[in-house]
Length: 103
Image (tube, rainbow, N blue to C red; front, top):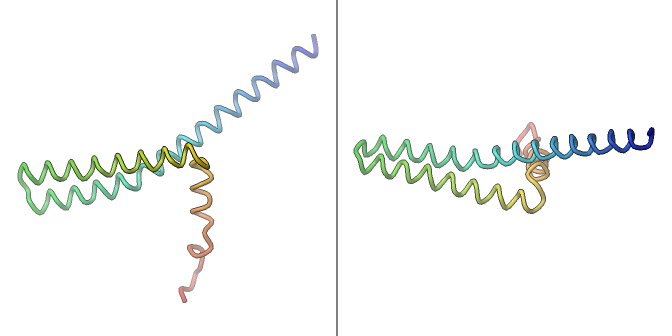
């Protein structure tokens, strides 16, 4: 009886750990997608402001859509490879970014 209770607790712990890790990976995935999407959206807004007609709107939506697809493709590549959290942590731990005084 005691052994089966330990196994049940261990299985629940593993399930919660897997759920937590998957949640973090998907949050990292969203962060990676957000950067190209934001750039595409900004280019789309600039395009729309410059043309300010149906063609400008279409080009603006196209820019944002291309940014979304690039972000999804890049995030999926990182998710299947090293993992999104690993990629983001390496990016944030870059010593060149941590320098206070540029040389």
